[in-house]
Amino acid sequence: QQQVKQSPQSLIVQKGGISIINCAYENTAFDYFPWYQQFPGKGPALLIAIRPDVSEKKEGRFTISFNKSAKQFSLHIMDSQPGDSATYFCAASTSLRWTGANNLFFGTGTRLTVIP
Amino acid sequence: NAGVTQTPKFQVLKTGQSMTLQCAQDMNHNSMYWYRQDPGMGLRLIYYSASEGTTDKGEVPNGYNVSRLNKREFSLRLESAAPSQTSVYFCASSEREGYSTDTQYFGPGTRLTVL
Image (cartoon, rainbow over all chains, first blue to last red; front, side, top):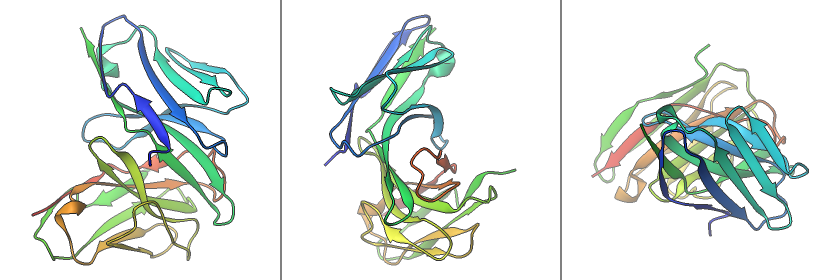
C-alpha cells in the first residue's frame, strides 16, 4: 500500500509556466515532508521540505503548499526552466524512535519536462 | 568530500548468482539506508542501519541481507538473484538516528539486471 500518493505521473510545461505536483498521505504520524529532485542517472537530492505546522514554504522558484486538514501537499515551480526537467518525488517522514532511524516514504514520482 | 559512493554502477547477473553492492559515506553519518527504485513504484526501503552495529528490515527486505561493516560502510547482498530484483539500488545516509528532519543523502545508484 502506497503511503504517499503522488500525481501526475508525468507533466509537460512550457518554459516560464508553472509546474504543480500534488501529493496526499493518510498517516498522521508523518512529521516532515521533503521533496526530492532526481536527474537521469543520478540519485535523488533534497530540493525543499516542510513541517506540518507551516502552511507554505518558499525557496526561490520552488514553493510547498501544505494542507494539514486535507492531508495534502503540493510543489509549485514558478517560471519553470528546461533545467528543471527531472523526476520529482514527494516524501513523508516519521521518526521511528523505537528503532532509532527515521523512515522516509516516497511517492511514485513525477517526470517533469519543460519545453523551451 | 565524495558524499555517498556506490559500487558497482552497473551489474548484470544470471538467476541464482550472488553479489554484494557496496556503499560508503564520508560525512560521519550515523544512519544508512538501502532503497530500490522501480518504475511507477518510487523508492522503497529495503534495509536500514540506525547506527553502527545495528540493522533492521524496511518495507521490502525479502531476498536481501545487509552488513554495517563500520560507521562508513553499509553493504547489500543478494544471495540468489531473481529477475524480480532487477532494479536501481540506492544507498543513502543521514546524520543522526531518530530525527525525521535529517536530510537523507543519496549515492548515484547501482543499476542491476538479473537475467
